[in-house]
Image (cartoon, rainbow, N blue to C red; front, side, top):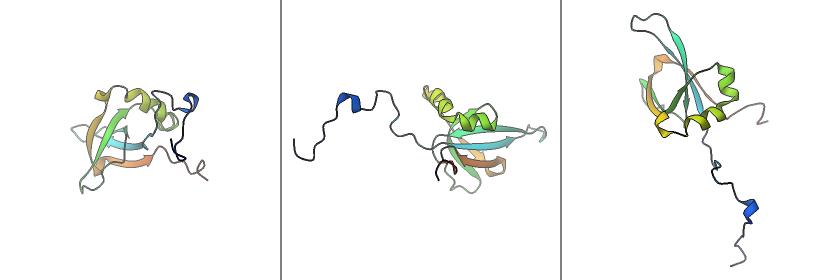
Length: 115
């Protein structure tokens, strides 16, 4: 060993199965309508990474749809992501037309917490 080598004790290790680097997640709110163009409903999609915004007519995102109200999703998104990503078959790639997207927000950034 050289002077620059560091020995980690077993107690200082990251526990097995712990996420080391969790990518920021984004909440996308979309409005969908039935085939007749009536009866719109709001749906929430959690994107597991920053959606691709380079397309002129749609947004491409990888993640999953989730149920619940906005406050529940924002406050408990880490648990929702952990539960849904256990099975990789829950993760889908979606293309949302821009006219259906109401907004997209970061679930990690919190202005009050980061002051």
